[in-house]
Image (cartoon, rainbow, N blue to C red; front, side):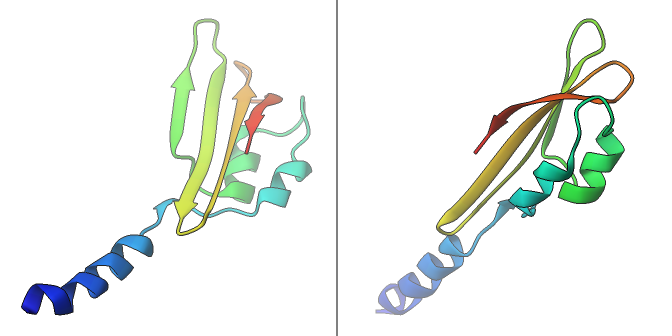
Length: 91
């Protein structure tokens, strides 16, 4: 009986869980290849969820979040000077 009462509450708690940091997807449009830096992107999008360094100094940075019924992700490549090269993937 107790399980039947607690089960809906537990299901709601699981649905409301958020992974990553929500960001304004349209803010990505403010970033300019060759000009914007990792710091600029972080200021607009918040803390990234992953950073991956490549040989030659390039860095791929990912911002993403998943929340009940909604998700977004953007991967941006930066050069060895920390300037934006391009948006690799946007979803």
